[in-house]
Image (cartoon, rainbow, N blue to C red; front, side, top):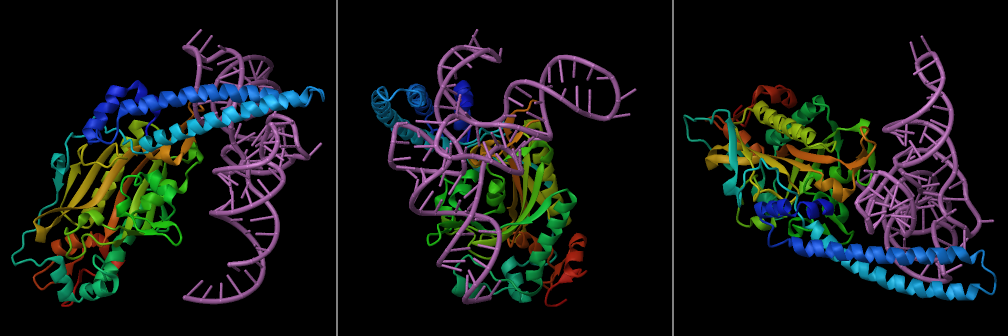
Length: 427
RNA sequence: GGAGAGUUGGCAGAGUGGUAAUGCAGCGGAUUGCUAAUCCGUCAUCCCGAAUAGGGAUGCACAGGUUCGAGUCCUGUACUCUCCGCCA
């Protein structure tokens, strides 16, 4: 959410931001601003009525018995008029709120400008793309060869886009999370395991609603949703609080099962572990002061941590600076990390690192008291993947495979796999 | 699932239907000076206003209702705690 005063005072800048993000058909600034001015007028006039009514009410106590009936009648009359005006105000306010909930964050002036993913910019590529002296297998073949999965059987039980993994691969998945959680803890993060069940409100707080209802599992019997990321839960964990500045920054390493309907991805990545309905994610989430230099610093730190994760996993990757048209509504700036997938001969997303500035905090009403001036301000929030599995297993087992189908385990991961240097049926 | 108790500001904590006490912390200011203390103001959102002048509206978990007037009375909902039952 944006500040309406900011929008009014910086109309041209905001319009430019809308253009860059591709929201010109969704948001009409003139409508929004005229709604706001009509709301302001209604507020002014209804408040004058409320003031008069309060004065009348307060005068009753000291009025004589003869005076009272007239005052009460007058007050009742005013009350009716006030009620009507408040209903009018409420209707206008609802229209206004609906538009404001769809108002995207403004992109950073440093963001590449582009209409869609074609406008994303590769910032750097790290690591050597593996060259195989044999014909490498794709991850599904490796799973079959090593007895690591039950992909066909589980589809009959749980439906398409689900996965069941076995033996070393199942433990490898958990090992990755353990490794990343340890790393985040060493960076000062609070490890927190959170539910995957969410009420509706946090979805608005995160900014997933009202944009993408189709993507979310909904359980009508209990009126709850399944979370697609721990970011959803962590973003609302402190909602409506006024945090003491001394507590900031708050660093969460959230772990949770995640659920996504993948409604918009029909036909994409239907084979294997890349795009499944349920997965596990360790998430980095930061709440910091309302200072763009500080949140940009944290954005870089989060990016660096996830690069370290891929380096520890010894995976070649590239860093993308996501362009204005490909960023989601909540984002001010976004970097994606993509790891190399040999079978697809391209990089595939493993991490998504975003600075949301105060856009989410305005929705969750999450503030802190700034010690410098004693003022209450909205915090900045940031999020990044720590590791998401089984997606990350795909580049991992494909890049580290040997000719016999076994998979090498990088040094940093071995402590989490009982010291194994290699996994597979033939090991 | 059943019964009961509760939810007031950043925190703590009063509040017989008639203007939300008080303490602590934070912020601003004043005063006295030995590692601090005291006093005053401020300390949630919004509106009028050029205003950092001064007014005003709203805010006691949320949503309604009764009333001239609701933190207080009534109804519903959420959450927390205690006990019982059932289950993993």
